[in-house]
Image (spheres, helix red, strand yellow):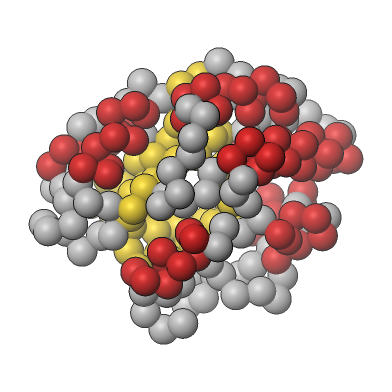
Length: 210
């Protein structure tokens, strides 16, 4: 793939930015928003963002911020409650955000087992193969189990403008989704900036196959 499709990811920290942007006044094609975290938290702007992303013409996605000290079943229940029983077929697959601040416990085997359980619950519920968001350090430290490879990786790497390093179970594979910056400005609002490794049609094909 040579063409890259541009997007951002947002949460309550971007306020009501989604109401001011669309596919006509930006060169963005997708917007991913935070839905939930742990077993009780729901982003206060999730419902508004989730609906507005579609109205503004973007491909959409939603993620759950995972904590290792919360059991996988109630975490998945929290995410599913926010998203509803039917996950849109034209959206990114469900995404789990697993990063440094997710790590609240020490038993790596338990962390791996619980995270795989969480992913499996979402896959069974929605019939979609979830995605994982992480960075190189966490990926190399915790996500080496080959069972993770089936889940497409959204890699965070702000230090390179060439192809990002793929960690853990994805070593040697081609990147799919890349969070390249956390300071992409739209007006005065800073956003996380993301690239999909393909054109818009390839993005839609990816979604259809995951």
